[in-house]
Image (tube, rainbow, N blue to C red):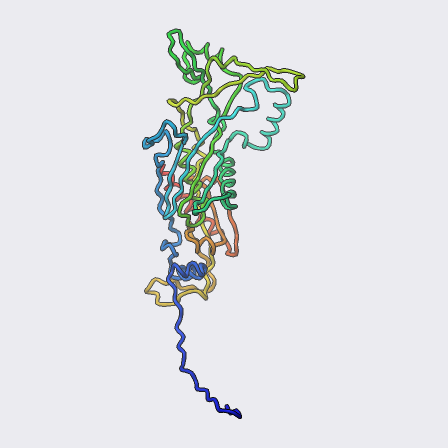
Length: 393
């Protein structure tokens, strides 16, 4: 290029070489989880190195957390009635069962016409009035504090509803069989329970038994550590193990409180007499929580994903690579890792027992077609999985 004052010459720069950028598998899974998953599926494996229909191994124990556990070291101040520690892969779920006692609003006998009509309407709606549930609180430990997340609240509500509709806990097993603590002629204090009474104790139980009734309310605290993949399966299965290990303490009232009455006044206009009772729990006596064994089931989940031909790794068949001719879908059992959870949108969740009796079935279509063949295969795998999980009790 020529100018009036001076001349400037430009020379061609040296050739620039461009090298491809490579990422380790764990980095690629965070940057592009769908591409990482498709690359693994093309090789016939998953990012967790399991086969398509392979489940994670499960290890279950009570963890010695319950006051009734053989490994418990603090049974005096411990209020945990049932517990379970479930490990699957890298994820741990710790479930602890506690309970409270509430007074029933319906008296033992002498229902009036309105209450009988209300019970009839409830029975007409179904059989849910014959079963109880547990009130779970799910906490996914992420190193943070604050209000529960939407996922934790939705999962807690789903666990409560599934336990109720599965009919696992009969209401009769939650009824408190109240005993009477009495002092005999010899000055010895003993507790008389209706189901343990003798002919000599029958009169005392009949005379002092209260005209009220109470029931247990079960609470479950479920803590998740090292979360990897969907959580419903592990939380549900851990809750089932914990409920089967739950022991309920016996409750009683003192004979001196059976006739205790207090006046209740309303703005000085009227006065009524109301019975009051102080319910005490027996630290030395307990009964197992009676569950409906025919309704117990274990959860298994599956995912359906379409293989992307453009993301396949084409190579020699001797290396075990999958050859894909056009669109193809695969069934993945027991989803794990962030790549599978975020990329697989079509899911099948089945709660069943080893005999194949369904308790809950959920099918969500998220882009990939869930065929009848895949549903039949999921049912067969879930049945075998339930038999294996039942053997860990």
